[in-house]
Image (cartoon, rainbow, N blue to C red):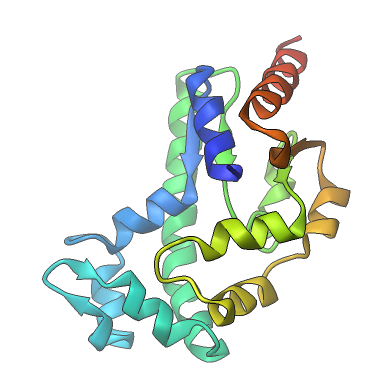
Length: 184
């Protein structure tokens, strides 16, 4: 259990959540806004079912230029979707929202947040969780981590830390406590 599970918990507590990974999945699905641009740069990774994320990952992880090209396609689209999400909730006068954004610090978006909750676990557990995902390899994980701020730095920049290695109940209680403090 990690950040995505924590985001689902927050959503269950009634807080709207912007999920950057979900936005990327929609952008790369058949008819998605990123499919055409990705097919121009990575034609072998696109077919009738949209972008083959496994193949695309094989093409970009470990290849700095290719990964940068992909990020230049996806990041502006994700930013636009996130801005629409925030604008919609501002118009609705939603008290607060949450953003599940894996590259929050790396893209400088933490400056646009009132508070940042970093969901963390011991490094060995983080690696174990990621490596259990379909198609994930140690090489891909190393490539992903090389583009991310180290966990210790994320912790240092956090408004609140939630340790997800202590079980779902502990995570739920910490998140509930954080939200109740924000509501005051």
